[in-house]
Amino acid sequence: MAGPQITIVGASLAGLRTAEALRASLPDASITLIGDEPHAPYNRPPLSKEVMEGFAGGGMSEDEAFARLSLRSKLSPDDVQMRLGMPATGIDPNGVRMADGTLIPSDWVVAATGIRPRRLPLHGNESIRHVLRGFDDARALAPMLRPGARMVVIGAGFIGCEIAATGRKLGLHVTLIEPGPQPMLRALGTRVAAAMAALHRRHGVTLLTGRAVEAFTPGKVILDDGKEIEADVIVEALGSLPNTEWLTGSGADLSDGVLVDDRMLATGARNLLAVGDIARFANPLFDDVPRRVEHWCIPGFSARRAAETIAAQETGAPQLPGFAPLPSFWSDQYGMRVQAFGAPALAETQTVIEGDLSQIGEARVIIEYARGGALIGVIGLGALPATIAKHRARLTAALSPKENA
Amino acid sequence: MKVHVNIDICLLHGQCVIAAPEIFSFDDNGDLVWVAEIDDSQVADAEAASDACPEQAIIIG
Image (tube, rainbow over all chains, first blue to last red; front, side, top):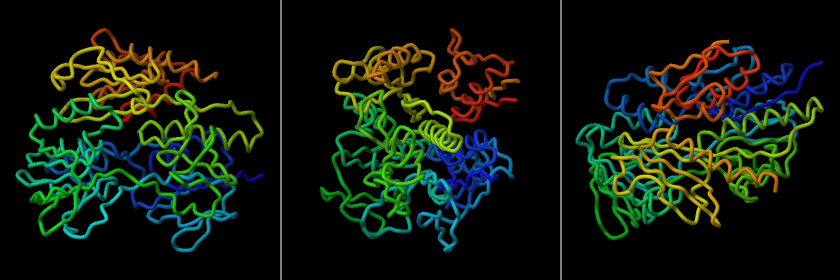
């Protein structure tokens, strides 16, 4: 008997890991992996850091850069049907509709379409305005990052801060504009964000906080206080939007990503699951509020969970309840690692438990984050993972009981 | 099965130590150490560690 037809839409980390896990658990399944980009699955984090540095600095060809990113896969060519270079445009009860009008018949659909950069709704300077999400974005941006060039980065989240740091390393003049009071404020909290602001300034970045871009004039960025900044290259790093338009009409809750239950099943839709950046799920380690989590670790966790769910439903095997991955994220800026575990963004208080934030970038600093008096996250700055490990163990112990609540 | 770590590209994220603490750990110097030869019961954990490595530095097989 033929196995189920499973279509995974999105051929990045989450889609690839879902395909691998499904191949292992449902050998009879017929799996199709769809990607709108022409590239085989690849890893995105180095695009703003070491690969951009090598790429822009001239030491790395496009092929070498892609080879560094390419995701190693456990799949052999016969395991899945890959359809790259064409987006899915819709979903109906029979399957997934492609941009060329064809239908891919599907018993199960896994949405892994990820996010795209938010753009400023302003005209002007189109030829020098860039975003950084995919390999093609990096390929377009890299030749602009020449020593002495003036780069204006709009948005001081992680991507904006990383590209600013990379720009400084490459010898550019960098102005970083952030509408909020500090860079990476939501993720890091006030004290650590302020220390990161100091780190950027110490490395020569002109960081302007509390400022928004009002307009572009030829070769210039105009701020809301009237200030004009000359720019040879502009990077818009203002956060992201989930790619869920193609799921309109599926019945799923698409108010921010795709609302899923603890099995990655989309609420309100039939045989639809979501994984990776677009999956909005409640994590019982913290509370019952569903959130999207744009960390690198989530695609792997959610892909395995989604594959388990489909396998359980196809085989009738029982599935353990609960999905409670420990979130973690990292960033590298000026050779300093920012390593987080847990959910610092949900914390009310921050306590430096090792080091001194005024020494950021020079000596290790470890910060604990708490909510309601209970440990909820830990961040290490310039700290080896081995030195954070004991704090992570305390965090894991503090978070576990709620799993049974 | 053998566990190989390309230490040249390892950036000490430590995700393998979380995914498979019986196979990967840090020594007193903070360097990564691992069990080079694993039995079948440990393969799933080792593969989870390999998947969790942001640098793809771990090869099982």
